Length: 168
Image (cartoon, rainbow, N blue to C red; front, side, top):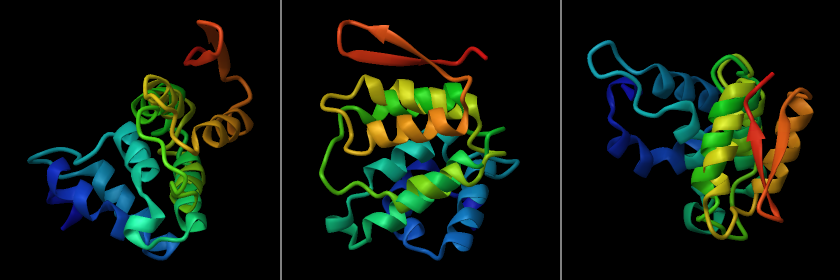
């Protein structure tokens, strides 16, 4: 059923998906990223990583660790969550910053390295860089991305911002 939903249908229920047991979240994430032959994926990998960072435990009643695990699962899917995707997602997330973004969801992404590849992670990170203020988990995600993909490069921008290079 998830593979047939649109982005507008998936985003409102995304916090409930992050709250699933990790294995079920990973399966749900795979369906969302795969989509159907008729309509395609509901979310791009970068959009999924941004959606994880947008989950606010207070609002969704989710433990922060649960969101961290979901994020780490993305990073394990390196062929999907590439450096470019991570950079794009990070650029998208910079504007949405709260104290209670979910860490379990992020951890789940890092565990799915065939999906959350170096290019995907770079794309997500580059999206988060444009957000003001940065998301709470931005620097944690940058550190995890560099740990997962040591060839990922940080490029200085302005005096305090860094962009992730997707070049390997």
